[in-house]
Amino acid sequence: MLDVGRFWSGTSPEILADCEHRLLSHVGSAYKVYPVPVQIESQLLCGPSNESIHTFELKGGGLKFSTPVVLVHGFASALGTFVNLFRELKKCCHSVYAIDLLGFGRSSKPVFPSDSFAAEGFFVDSIESWRIRMKLPAMVLCAHSFGAYIATNYAQKFPAVVKGLILFEPWGFRCTELSQRGWLHTFESAVNPLRLLKIAGPAAPFLMRLFTRELFQCTFAGIGKHDEMFMYLYHSNAQCTGDSGFMALKELNYRAKRPLSLLGLQCSVTLIFGADSWIYATVDLHALGEEAFIEIIPNAGHQLYAEQLDLFVCAVCKAMERV
Image (tube, rainbow, N blue to C red; front, side, top):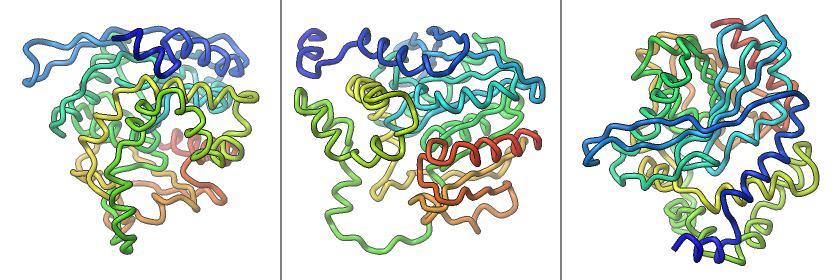
């Protein structure tokens, strides 16, 4: 079955590993990548689920921030997309880590439960198991989009170990009322795009190029060389199972079934938005009260860490100073 899948999609773990290596070569200094065994307990499983979380580790020369920073990617993404950010953070941080969320990138590919509470638990509890294995007594979570949703829920469940939350373009907060965009938009938001990518087989790279042309020709143009980013994300998403976990947590119109709340958090919280992003246009900032510092990056959309790297790094450093 696995060989048939590899033939149909034209991908494999080995190809993805090579794509990641090419992309991370631009970090410009020594780093480590390795799998970390994690164990997840679930009432829906007969026993514990033994998985692994793919981990990036970089020891920076900066002594300004000593608490380890852990970067968490968003939906349809993986840790390699932060390669330019790694290069900047090493200048001011002692330790920088990044993980592939379970089911994404080079982490193991479990079958996610369709129950939203159980799916959320898979993501959250796997990070705690990872932290214990890594022997990190405390950390700052710096998380993008869907990763910000998981990081916030993690901080609420395990508040003692999170010293700061830096959430950029966070998905999952309560939205303002969206204008009616018709049945087509509702249908599109109900479809799992990565499922379609995997079904498309040999045609998938062409279709991905067609529908993400601006993303790779403009937004990610400054990351890697030639097709490195495209190939990395294609092979990552073609092997993904974490998409089913995301689908279990969302409603139509890309809203979270259980919107995020910042109440009860015991750490510094910073929200960073791109001024031109769809999330910033729809999130109800008034509902957040005074629970967080809010930074707006001009001339940036959802991938603000790629579009305005210098301004984004500046906002992250300001957030780190508040930890």
